[in-house]
Image (cartoon, rainbow, N blue to C red; front, side, top):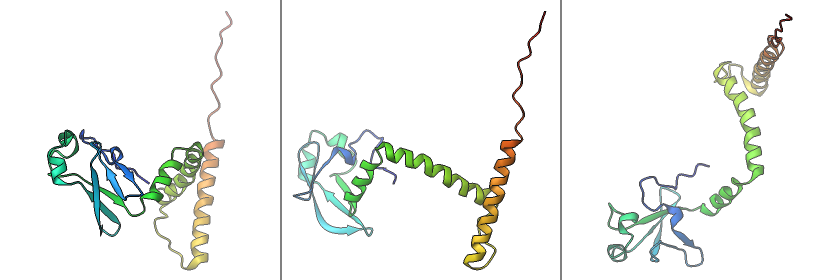
Amino acid sequence: MWDKSTRSDGTFSRADFVFDRERNVYICPGGKLLHTTGTVIDGGTLRYRASKVDCDVCAFKMRCCPSTPMRYVPRDLHEDARDVARALAKTEAYEQSRRERKKVEMRFAHMKRIFKLDRLRLRGLSGAKDEVLLTATAQNLRRLVKFLCRPPPSAAVTCAT
């Protein structure tokens, strides 16, 4: 999951707003409330809006919403699950899993790019299985040849004078 909630233009990001689950509102850095109408936008997003009256007199207006009359914060319907995923992404077990997953995924990427396995040519499940098995065998043989055919380490030449 990519977290694109941070902003680089100097304005407040969504992380600067605190979500109060009990009241179902966001609280802005100025202490004002952002409410939602409950209308789902784009199939899975709620929009929490501040009051224009609150934003007009706010001291943080230029850091919060300099180009709009009021601030709104989008919240995905599944934001609780995203919070769990963000918390897991900060653990050492996740980093280890990610390193191991990269190794496997790179093998499949090489199968697609180098061995041209971008589409299967044989029909059926057994045909697909055979094609992937042959490609993986060729990939492993190629790695074995690279491993076995390395030049020997150069011996340090010593001169006896």
